[in-house]
Image (cartoon, rainbow, N blue to C red; front, side):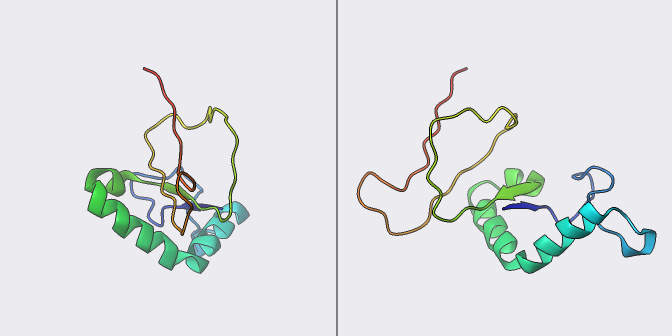
Length: 104
């Protein structure tokens, strides 16, 4: 699931924040409703991020949340900026981590 920032000020593209008074797009309404349902998760993630990197947290506009995800080696071509990864849970030694490979 992808959650998007609740505030539009300087972060979002036009039409991504739902405004009932102007009958913005259905997509914007869905984005706003998803955030409403998961607001506690957004707030906790932002709090954790502020503890680690307040500057990044102030600019963060999206968060991907997965459960039980098992990935395979791949390249995220759309991830063109910095990002953080976090794995939570009780994992056996050497498992449960997030592996990132990069080259300059």
